[in-house]
Image (cartoon, rainbow, N blue to C red; front, side):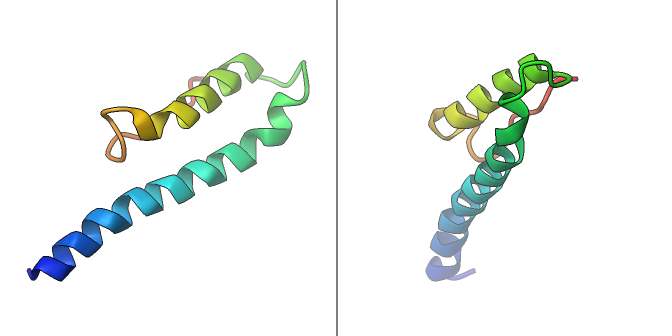
Length: 68
């Protein structure tokens, strides 16, 4: 593998992870606005984990999970 391919993949993985994170936040936006939405408390915690994820040691390899 060339140096270009290695650097390209190390830049692409975090970019894809951030795109996935943005989609997850968008998908849960409306759910947290409804006070009695099922599983709302866990969704709020999930969103906090999503926002904190890029600064964590787990980024980008281990994605936050929504508890049920």
